[in-house]
Length: 220
Image (cartoon, rainbow, N blue to C red; front, side):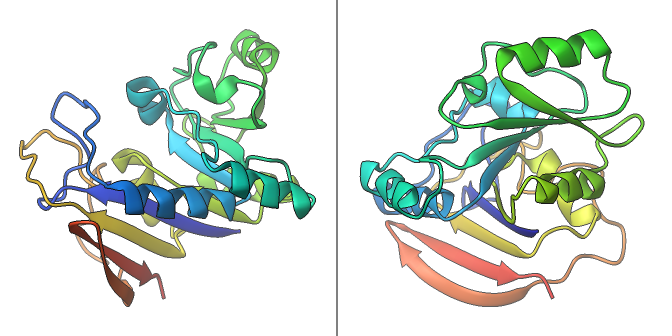
């Protein structure tokens, strides 16, 4: 599976405010770029923190792009994937609507009744790992479902975990023209952080978009 991480940060590297309140960092041109990335993906993934904070639908906005997906024999929208080690996805979350299939990645410790409730809400539950989601194993299961290109939209805890497990192939970051600040505001890669053996990136593209800049790296 090819994993492409895409994010938008402020000039000081923040994803949102210290209250986890969503901030509009990108402009119209970058929103359109992200929509194109979604349309070109088999699935779009977020962590449960993003679901709780923003309640995103993770669907393709453009009617034309949805139509082109159908012409290629694909569903109008890519599948949705949510990493949910702590079982916090609400049954009325937008990602559980009928616009696209949704996979919830949980640990094997997830109670059977909760898994049943999520299935009734429209999700396919993928249990991998004892106490927390084993992302590599879960991704193998998603590949078995025919998902080969995965776009990850955050948040910082999930992105750190993906780098920690060596699962990222490409990183795209739009750096916007604002400063959010706050030592407790989420960053691109939260979590425990690396002390050594830092993941190295190879810069593949730099492009100005709106009043910000898009940086693209591959992971050797």
